Length: 54
Image (cartoon, rainbow, N blue to C red; front, side, top):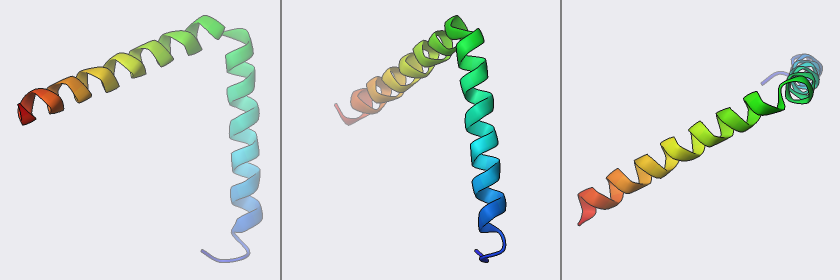
């Protein structure tokens, strides 16, 4: 990673965070839906992994 790339990456991260904040503010239900789906996928993966070890 070069030093010249750092400000660009930080700027991109800030833009991404601002965009995420706007989306979250306007579509809170969408954020909750994604979180629920992510939770269920993680739980399902953990359950299948646990089942394989038994």
